Length: 306
Image (cartoon, rainbow, N blue to C red; front, side, top):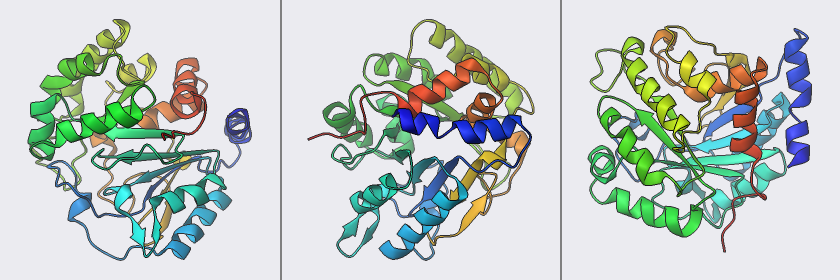
């Protein structure tokens, strides 16, 4: 864990010395395939080639050579990736040889507890009725059962807030209090442009962000820093996209904005708070640095359950 934390010192110093900074975080969409059909997600609708195991390893090598420190396996549903006898666990084994921190985002339908991740984010959209309205009947109960049996106390929840679920934030935070280590929020992005019935324009996000700030002060598991939640109320907030890299199912790698090759990049519509948090951390905001350490390097080691 200490070695992983120390690996961020060189890019941090380069950033403050005005030198070229490598991407430190990469989201690898290893597959677009998914076992759900969530109303707000564009990725399950996409097709195209998916890498075999040797190409996946090559992609990991290229990301590592770029300087990536944190790898997040994404989808679709990354648990579905297969190549013959190779499955996601084999990818994690290879990733752990190359990156100080290996994480995953998942919809929580399939058990993940025997995989050695440093951190897992489970997508949850709200209390049971709201979650199932977004993802399918009975999905909440399946996710909750997996969360309690495999990830209780060490997993994080990831919530994308849109008009469909904004009203359930307080109830969801109450439900999760004492169950998970934290909840990270972002705002729904209009991948197909406007109008988008789920999109909340930045001026309309302020009351939701104020509510999250209040809940965090009251001890609810809001993981985002006060600085980031406050900055997200601005029409244009800080994002150092040079700190990011993105890999696609076919092995394509792009450096910069998360939306490259994934949709129209309109900064005024963005609500990817994790990128703001990381940018604030590199600018030296103590609370954002503390959030990064907690999210990526807290705990006793990789997420692993018998």
